[in-house]
Picture 1 (cartoon, rainbow, N blue to C red):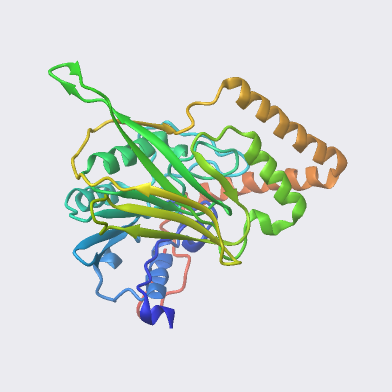
Picture 2: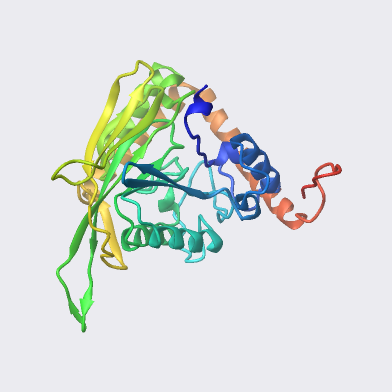
Length: 359
């Protein structure tokens, strides 16, 4: 009934894609893409089926106003990087989430848009800083910077980021500054704010793993000076809802970012203004959390507390150390397997029928 009344759009993240922390080396990605688009009801002759990834955009008319939903694919062309237990930053300028085909499409889409608001959807979080155990755009700082520059310099009005993946919900807020030069003289810095609503997930979260795990995770999130986090986190089952108000007499456009729990209540809510001007404000932007940069002492103390808690758990529960050791061994096996798959990527690994084959 819902699908018959409401348009359902979709992009994917790793577990929809077919492998945890998946990237461009996944050997079944073409087959996964076909099945995913079939699930969404994408027409067989859709141009989306012939591109490198499931990225897409769609425009909605609201009276005389327009809203665009932009769906990014951060898996199909993603550069591989080390996953669990440590996901470190990769400063290589060639490391990328989208692939050049998708970058060119995204630039054309945003620069040519006449919409009044743009909801830009990424499977992975874009704004929040690097975290120990999660994937996000800061893993590839050059790629993240390219995305922010493009969004903020494209002239696209009212951009709002939407994401998932992390198994909890939060609202992130960045202050972005662009410095332009006129004949070699720095102009007055221009400032914009960018928001991101993260909702994850509808079936399980860190909060559904039991009280002990929930409280430990909340301690971790409370201790660390996360500079982008606007109003704390929500740990239980949730969905995200964005309400956009475009036609307000004498007032600019506004959006409400909401996290709604299984009880139907709004547990996180943030009202933001959407800029009314489509002016392109610069090409190079410096974005940081609205709270400012945390002190190194605060970060160090948080690290020491978290490490102390983990060591205490392993002392009290020796089996936890065994589980960690087995997980590290699996990581090593996974890396070797990936290397072999890359070496033999041209070998057929699936059955061939009258219509399809995958390799």
